[in-house]
Amino acid sequence: QVQLEESGGGLVQPGGSLRLSCQASGDVFSINGMGWYRRAPGKQREMVASSSGSGTKYADSVKGRFTISKDTAKKTVYLQMNNLKPEDTAVYYCNVKGATMAPRAYNSWGQGIQVTVSS
Image (tube, rainbow, N blue to C red; front, side, top):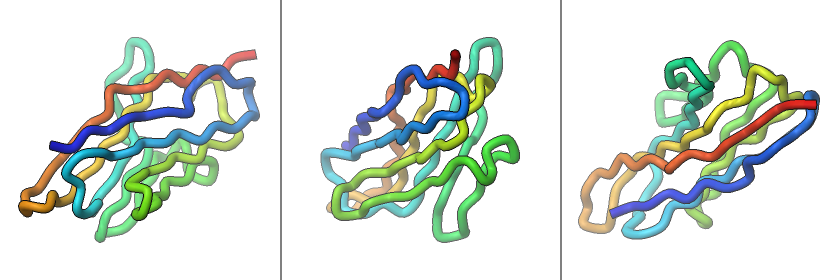
């Protein structure tokens, strides 16, 4: 079983930056795919950024401002968010896919972390 713990959210002023972290723990042998999603109040969950062997994708609304990355040794996935806007306010969720030692495939989700952009 693979658990994910998110950190780095909070309140930031428009134009500011935050870096979200998503650390995987448990039976993690590899990370093959990762993604960040968000759900704003009254809206459906949307993909913000995703990366796998097929490439990296960003939502049009965050292109040029957000960057997804990972540190394999730390089993951690990041989302660097720059030039934040009020419309970026949402609960952000990380998603990580890979293999355990068994090996078995896993597809885990974090519990979500609040990001609020407001002056």
